[in-house]
Length: 613
Ligand code: BES
Ligand code: ZN
View 1 (tube, rainbow, N blue to C red):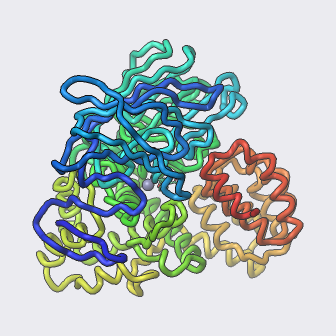
View 2 (cartoon, protein in one colour):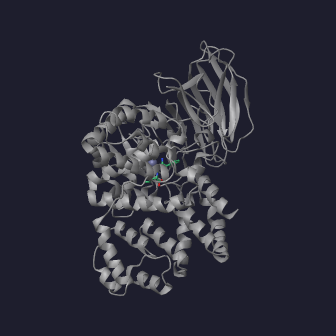
């Protein structure tokens, strides 16, 4: 389908072409004239300068005979030189770099009087790169060697590679990476397991991927296999606990394959990052990047692995064409994640996780601007990071759960499987999906779900009235006990003699009133030791409640927590809640932030700077 976007309205001009020409508002790339089908990176990792230095070579396919330019996305890069290859000969090429736009970065326009088949850009990244984090030895587990890694989603690849930075196109890549000799480099590619640590590493990613999935990590890393297809890269002192935590990954692959056909990427490894990583996980192909805060010792948070793995189908194989369509990646992935959790850990756990997700979403919906509660996101020149919320995740998941409920798994599961297979290695817009859904599900089994209903889910704000409403029996039992204590009929100790899962604890904390007395908070803490829990999710939920209830006994622990981890999902709401609470708490939080800021990722810094501006 060929579409032209006129002030936000998609007009269908010619139908039955391929799902190609898409307008990406946050990329300068002229992908309708020329596309980069493959890139080779040759980069040296310079810890002292905090820079990746070298070149990228683009292999070009020209789509428009009269085109004379290649336009690339960049941000905060130093461009040394550009060369073009014509008829086998390399020559200098003229280029210009525009001023830096706050959202998109700087446009690199390369003049090509004849249509070169290859273009090389010699460049260096700067310490400002929004897509890289440079950690000192002190910020790692081993405290001996520095660490660096990339986080390219959504539009940060351009801060370390001059590239056509839009998910509407795909490329293959190869790389030569030079590092200090004692360190290992890994990428979202083929990571040769037998490579000696010698400071020069080679990579190959033969399957075409969108540029936001190009990724690199460099540090004092060891590898341990968990199964024929899965393994973990981590700092030596973290490796054993990570392997013990994540050794169900192979089972998760098999559960996915049973539902949605083969895993198409060969190997699936995990890279455990230092605690400063701003996300829970990132689905870099063949090598998901994972926060160490999910190593809880009891596998209670491994739905994160199910999530990143599920992206191997939704996101990495079938990709959102623009960041307005993020729900196609994250909503599908949240849905698949939960189906896999059900297969591997049973229905009870899967339903508890649904309940917790939906409850978070409902809280979030109260505060979000109405437009950001639509599945198809209105970006209008905003940075995709600024529109980030639980909506594409959980509302997207609920929409798919709704379809599953209405059609039944016997019809819905094959539909999703076929959707993945028919769109493998392609990018789709929301409209492409809606059309596919109409043809292959709605019209195929008439009178079950109307297109009005579909459009309500996708284009209207908030949740439809008949949105699925997960109910957990296990939680209902927790509720009975909690109500017994709150009404004075039961002692806290009588709640204690059971073995609640982490999920039940999270539910328990969620259900506690926001205006508990300090005394009651203290009683709970004395009996259950929540302040010193070793589970990052439990501590987060407890600290949030402690702030609301002025339970200041947590303060020292809270301060250490804020200084010790950089995961945005935890630290941003904590800083926000402290700063909303009172001037005193705001000042206190600001002083913690001043100490901690240098250790946070640029993305986390950006979010928290806004709180204290
Ligand atoms: N792809 C996302 C992370 C992301 C999304 C980065 C948008 C930048 C822009 C990743 O798969 C993710 O969703 N991570 C979640 C996992 C959770 C939902 C289980 C996270 O980091 O918390
Ligand atoms: Zn995700």
